[in-house]
Every structure is written in C-alpha cells, then in structure tokens.
Image (tube, rainbow, N blue to C red; front, side, top):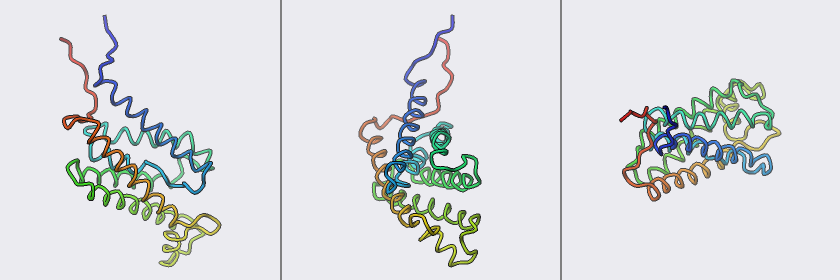
Amino acid sequence: MPTLDHSPDRLTPKLWIVGLIIIVGFSRHLPLDYPGLFNFSPALAIFMFCGAYMKGLFSWVAPIVAIFLSDLFLSSSYGINFLEPFMLATLASYIAIWILGRKLGNNKSAYSWTAGAVGSAILFHVVTCAFAWIINPAYIKNFSGLIQATVLGEPGYAPAYLFLRNSILSTVFFGLCFRWIKITVFSESFTLRASTPATQR
C-alpha cells in the first residue's frame, strides 16, 4: 500500500518555496504602506543566494516561483499588468544575478559577497531603467534621456536614484543575512538539492 513520504529531503524544497514566497510577498507589500521603501526587497539577494548555495533544478525554480507568485497577487495593488513587457527585462536581470551568484560560489569572502550584492543591484537598475527608456515615450531617445531614466526617472515620480539606493541596501542586507544563516545555522555539509524519487527497500 503506497504511503506518503514526509521525509526531510522531500519537505525541504517545499518549505523553502513557501518561505521565499512569504519573504518576497511581505517585502513587496511594504511600499504600499511606506512609499519610501520601494525596491527594498530581498528578491535580488534570493536569486544571488540560490545561484551560489543551491544545487540542481531547485536552485532556479524556487526563486522564480516565489517572485512570480508574489507578482501575480500584488500586481493589481501596484496598478500594473502581470504580463507586461517590462517583466522580460526583470526576468533577464534575475537570470543574470543568478548566474553571478553561481560564479561567486559558496567559498568567497564576505567582501566578495557584498561586492556581488552591490553589483547585482546596479545591474538590475541599469537593465530595467534602460528598458523603461526604450519603451516609455516620456523619455527622449538619446543619451541624455537614458541618463534621465537611470538617475532621475520619469517626471512626477520618485527619483530613480532612490530606487537604486534602496535596492543596494536591501540586497546587501538580505544577502549577508542569507549567507550568515547558511554558514552558521546549517552544517558545512548541508546542501540544498532538488528532491529525487525515493527508492523502495
């Protein structure tokens, strides 16, 4: 008679996905009440951490599921379409940051990890602002328009450099927190892997 497998190896990926969804969803909801916290999110740190420390299919499936589910439920609150073209630039940035995390690996110093977090935030900011410059008619299609999109943003909205500031601070903060938890809470031999089918004995 078949039985349900509730072993830790089976449950760990599910628990991590749920945890990531809760963390990302909560951080995405904060700016609705505190506008000054726009872009203060663990999203970039999650992709960098998963690229560096997780192995197998789960290393990129978990953060993508967490981000897209939070976007699905919160996009209406921000007045945007979940499937708008801007999501392509966002997804490309996430993938690049995941690759950066993979390059960093799990044996780098805290200094290298901090530099990677700052680089991830800058990369995300430049890619998404450049895409906004391309598709948004509010920006002049020349170099000065690109600088405006990257530094000042669209007139009538918060300056783009504030978004970059919050993105850098949050990515460094959450990135170091995730790294500290991995190093201190889990044993050195602990590695997150995608669950594999259990064999019968």
